Length: 132
Image (cartoon, rainbow, N blue to C red; front, side, top):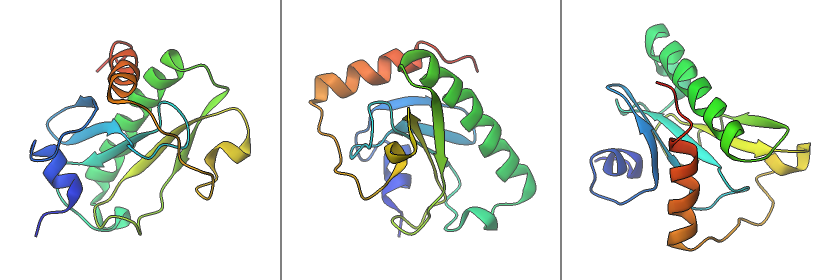
């Protein structure tokens, strides 16, 4: 059975897409800690990030780096926090979270709410800064 992320990648579930290439897909988290909170996933469904082979893992990290540069350019922040948790969805993924302090990446914080138009605007801002 496909994960929710595979369904997003396949267009079965809508998302606020940031970017994709042949192997990786980035989209806004719909329960963000901060504006611009993005998820980066391999298109190949793999449960645990360290089950990816070296080429897939390094590709995921390099794709995430390009996305993080775009986020930092589009969303005012000091840094982009990186979190790999891996329990909430059985599909390897990386959280990229704009941050100004350590608390910004606390997953116990209340999640922000944005309208569909706000999500679209954030996604467009980030997408416009991507150099792939």
